[in-house]
Image 1 (spheres, one colour):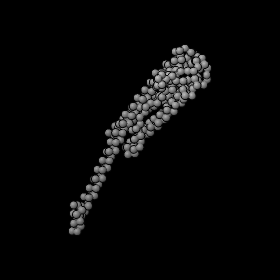
Image 2: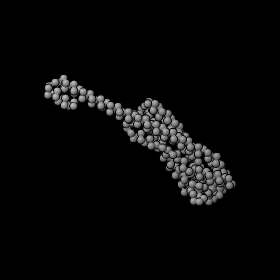
Image 3: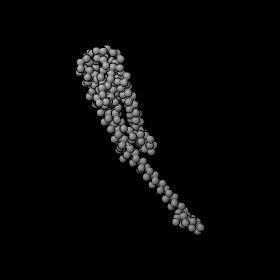
Image 4: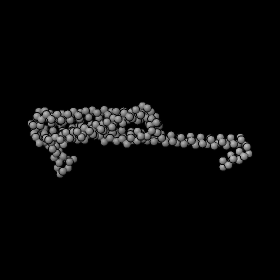
Length: 242
């Protein structure tokens, strides 16, 4: 309709009307572009907010997972102290051997927290979301991402080492699994405490693993505190976007 009218105005050489029609067309296109840009910006903003909300929930879950693993290690501290003392004193009493068995079982267990990071990965891959975030928050996001990756890698690697050193490759240790259920297995020893405590390799591995658990506890505690700070950073960024 508009094109037909413009054609007629050109034939009539009504240049004012042609100019007015042209202005209407250009204005319509500009308005349409503005609306499209605004709609896209709103969509990106809503997507960024939703992703940040999910990221906050995931970070909170990771904090709980860290607290659970830290508590697990701390709960077994009394038994580990009893086992280390029995080992140092070459105490072969049944109670001492039970404590040593429980300690090796605990220290060889998987202490890797069940970290979740799907929203973190989604946010890291979305430039249109990242462009809406402040430089300070992007820096905090990168630090959190790096620490999460590092903790997951270190804990997984060291769990494998602990299990191999104390169970798989240890000639003094074997597993007793009632009914063949490995989850109910307990550690037993081929030699008495009097010989184990005199074995430098067994003693070194036991002490090194206890030391590593202390380090792991400290690392997870620091990461938990950093994660709690990151949760505050997310709240601040959400408040700004909203």
